[in-house]
Length: 354
Ligand SMILES: *Cc1c(COP(=O)(O)O)cnc(C)c1O
Image (cartoon, rainbow, N blue to C red; front, top):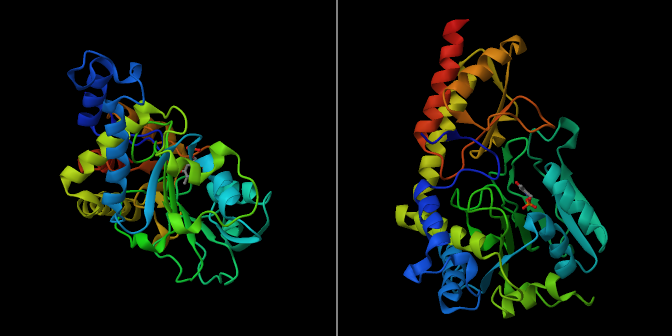
């Protein structure tokens, strides 16, 4: 039986998507060829790419609004660099909410002044900074919607005339937002969309072409838009599986539907963390992520017992990030509510044992 997969990334994908993907590896479109042995310029694959790009915009409600979707390589980590390469003239504002935000800040510093407008570093990033000011002359404001590692999530985004750039790697397609607030959104596929190897970037086209520096071909968003994500050989498998996952989500009822499920899963687990005296949540309650719930045991001597119990129940991937410790339950779109119930039952069993 399939395990209850709470892995933080790469992470759980819908079973029916995995089934279809495995069939396509053997025989794609009944062409008697594998998806991964045909030309990326073949009609069959070009259709996949087009569908993936249009589904991304459709799910986010950004069709016909001046946005383009591209599938790139190099992970979300390369976007830390590309964003600054393509958009930073003089000064950019960054919100430091943890490791990923910090990596983005580090890359941007090579291109201009980087203003850290807010940071939660003082408390191990266990909350989202609020009440910060974004200077009106900043080229853009960069934020990370969900801190995958510590388990905080931005519930609100600033009202500003400055372009908002957001790393949504770990909560893309998980909740409804006014996506038009953002001029650039990027997400590595492997958290909520597909296998590692591709990154979805959604760009409002009018923000491009304004920096004076020469941009190397493969780092230039305008090139990738013009070449429709085919500037070179794309990650065909990763794009295909991402397309299947987006189609799965659309068929279920889109983000509106999955957000309700995600809220139910998070509510169930956080309620148990708060009720059960053996567990404590790690982050500020108002900033708790619906995707990654982090918690610790109040009595560390129970660690071995608890670990043996959840592992025996078929739970995978519950250990916290090495920099945080404790536990992290990642509840991405494809994780069923039932898996969360299994975890909650184990937490209650541990309590009963004590
Ligand atoms: C995992 C993650 C990244 C890094 O993604 P890669 O594709 O491995 O480069 C960046 N940002 C966030 C929020 C993440 O969760």
